[in-house]
Structures are given as structure tokens and as C-alpha cells.
Image (cartoon, rainbow, N blue to C red; front, side, top):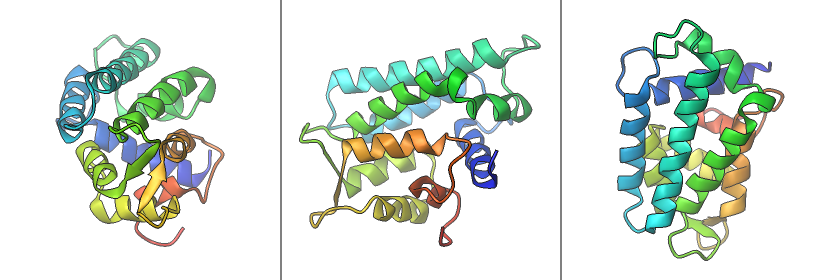
Length: 177
């Protein structure tokens, strides 16, 4: 696993621990879902339901695959190896990437404007400076928009254990990547 991927995963765990109790549990995913849906007030019901389903699948996949001791929570030690396993987690990441990027395009023109991108990423818990660095790394057009496909691909790359120097690395640090 690349160092960059390990740093991304540590960040994801900390963000998913939305209630701050040191482990992942169903409440974390409910909290995260509620924050993201609230940030996407202009999105349609089908897009909101898609992100709800993606977050549910995320939790269900983690709980099914990782809760070896049956305690109903996922520790960081349980989380690390699984999330970076594309064969086990790839479909879950793809569903999440498609749902989140579609949520950022309420007018369905295939483009995501910076303000909504920032609102959604802040709802997940990323730092604003890092969010802007990521958006800039996606090379927005003259109207400060990126494509839905660009963001979906960026999300999937974020979970790839063998990638470094990707736009998503800007979410871990505001330093140059």
C-alpha cells in the first residue's frame, strides 16, 4: 500500500466516525447521511435516496465484511485493510461515487459548481482549504465547474491503494502533491 493511500484511509475513518466515539457504527452513517442530504437541498428526491442507499450499503458492507468479533462496530484496525481492497470494496465505492457526484448536479447538466461541491464535502467533514485544493486539481472550466464524471472518478481513485499524486491526495494535506 502506498503511503498516500494509507493517509487517505486514516482520514476517511476519522470522517466516518461522525459521532466521535473512536469506532464506526450505524449512527455514524446516519449522521453523515443527514448532513450530506441537508447540504443537497436543491437535489431531487431520487438523488437523495441514492446517497442514502449508498451510505447504507457502505455501512452494511463494512459490518458484514469486518465485524469479526461481532461487537457491532468497526475499529480503525479492522477498517484499514478492507477499504483498500478493490475486490471486496470496489462496488461499494463505485455506488457511493456515482451517488455523491450525481447529488452535486441538481440541474442534471453534467456539471458541478464549486459552491455545492464545497457544501457537500464540508458535510462529509473535509477541511475547506483542502476541498478547494481538490476542486482546483480537477481543473474546473472558466465558469468554475467540473464534470460529474470527473468527481466520480476522483472518488474512486481516492480509495485505490496503488495510486499517488492524485487529486484526492489534496484532501489529506493542503501542501503540494
